[in-house]
Amino acid sequence: MTDIIESFFKAFFSFSDMKAVYVLGKTSPEMMAEPIDSEGWYRWKPINGRINIMEYHAVEDKFSMKFPESFIEWHKAYFFMDGDCSILRLPYSEPNRPLEQLIDELDNDFAKHLIKQKLYPFAQGGNDEGALVFDAREKRSHHDYPIRVCYYEFLYDHEAISEIIFSSFSKLLECMTYFLNEIKTQKDYEIIPHFLSIDPEGAGKSGIDYWLGLVAYYKDNATYFNGQHDL
Image (tube, rainbow, N blue to C red; front, side):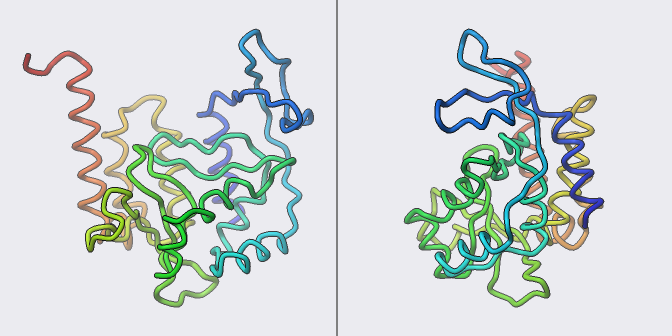
């Protein structure tokens, strides 16, 4: 798992512009790689994480849920100021507020509704379509739950929950590592189909329709914004 985590962060730090807005009293000086610019932005640098695992367990107890062990291992590896991977947004972590993003995902009415169903929000879809959730309705070793999307638009509808789009968090990391490395030279809709072979038991199985639908969406958008649409 360590190799998967390190490969992801190497790809992510190369992909991210690593810029954030300075917030007095909240921004950690040790993460500032450059001074604040004239518009209030600064360039950040990752530093090794130092969150005690008991802090994660305290969040789990507070919200009556469980994180996969692989997710905790990933999240506590570094402090980093951004988790935007383009097609999804993962929770970042900073020294002064290390678990704030995780708590924000869990401490709202939408999340509470999902948690009662053993669906545990931890991240966001890239198009604000909904929350990415760990599906804990079936027991898994090390809490290695599959991942689904819960759509905001259909909160109380039977269509609110997608099929499994990743078979586990480690497969999410592998897919996103591939995406972040390849996006430098390829279009998003050219990269996403490879998820099906990277994660054959999730993205390549029940998640096929979801991912191919996203491919079609990005392809249509690219065509539109390139001026190839009908007037």
